[in-house]
Image 1 (tube, rainbow, N blue to C red):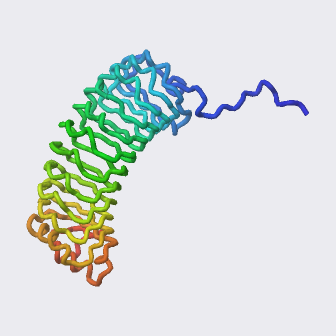
Image 2 (cartoon, rainbow, N blue to C red):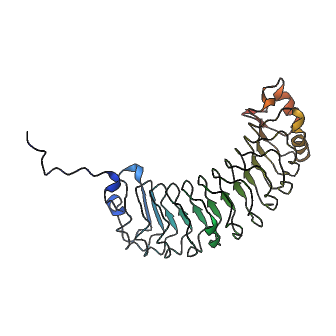
Image 3 (cartoon, rainbow, N blue to C red):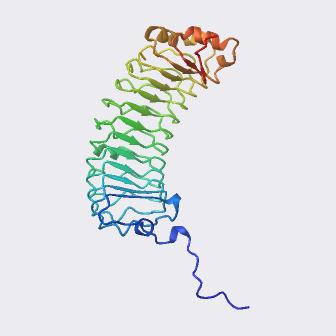
Length: 321
């Protein structure tokens, strides 16, 4: 039997092929945006062949097989760099990208946040779903408005206290046990769901907060939230709450999730009822999978307690029972 034809090309796995942006995108020397999603065809494995594209303001190479940040030193006009869902291990070779406003390195293999001080204009930083344990170095980003570090291994909230412009902070799915380090911030959205938090204290100074997500923690009672009068959305799903005491300050609350908490009596909703009657803005409440949810006349009693509510669980209250 003859050996396999020597002229046949040896198979090379996709991750080991040398594929650069010019191999998958038609290049115009004057182009300002370069966009390629690896799920639509060939996957880029190396950033190369674009150094001459000095007019680029947006470089998006999502869902590829890129292992290194490299060969971008000349792209000084870049404002958006998105390398979401690649194989990058280190944030490096970015010091010339001084005009960056948005940097997305989510879904990579990054373990450390380096000194990011060259990125003084950065407004949005996405580092979700990496292997980061320490967030301290975000402190060097004075223009930051949005920070997403969800799905990492962070245990302590650090580095954000000096970020006076920060409005949105996403730290869900980490290993945080204590809410701290947020004093003086003007956050509008804070996501701390799916952590290991046992107390809601630490939020006292966040008077501008509008959305607060604390679902899937171990909070037994509502504390330190008296000043959060601007919050309109509050998610406390799957905690250890037995009543609604401590909610009297939520003058703007419209949407509330209390599902999967051990609330056993309708009397436990009295504080929430007073809130509904006093301010009249509470529109949506979820109490599914609590002990009272399966009680007789659950719906009628809840609607009597909460006269402003227009949606109880998944059902409209347009026709009141």
